[in-house]
Image (cartoon, rainbow, N blue to C red):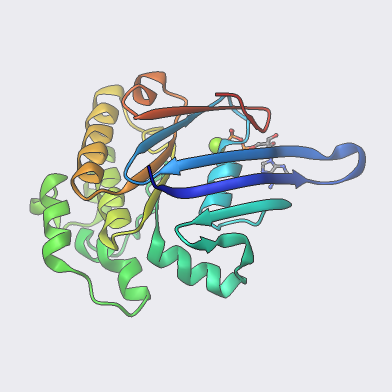
Length: 222
Ligand code: ADP
Ligand code: MG
């Protein structure tokens, strides 16, 4: 199977001397294209640090991160920003929607930042799958938490990124809404062959993934 993501020798140390925190210590990981991977681990185990490195939001102390044919660690910060906008979709726990923009404007916002034209027919397919077609002119504050997270998922998928990174995307949702949102995320990603790496501490949700990776104290243990 083809790997979309290859991580080798990845380290992230915070601080130095006696107070050094080895948030990631020699992590190796390969992820197959089109698969849904869940990353689980206790609080403080290094999950967010890993996801931020994978998405080029932060730079590692050592190691390499290859996405497709690009080694993220070889890019300068400007190149990393451009790469991130085109190739990576992010979904965060608190949705991160822009409150003064409508649902549609939020969904196409990252694409317009890049000066690109949104693929409207593709985005409408995503919108329909996520059940948002009646909400496109609404402002985010007028939506429920589950609806807001579906907007964030539509935004992440809209630019057809090669990989979607989600950090506890259902952390603010009740369990029924969580299951629905993850079910939809899984369905859309399968439909459009997008790769998902999702952090969760919810084992029920992890069970919906194709593969579960466990991290403990900055090491991958399974
Ligand atoms: P998780 O997402 O699994 O809860 P994190 O990746 O946020 O874990 O954190 C892993 C470890 O790195 C923790 O010990 C945390 O305190 C530490 N850490 C995370 N970010 C920073 C930072 N910016 N400065 C110092 N230590 C940090
Ligand atoms: Mg975290």
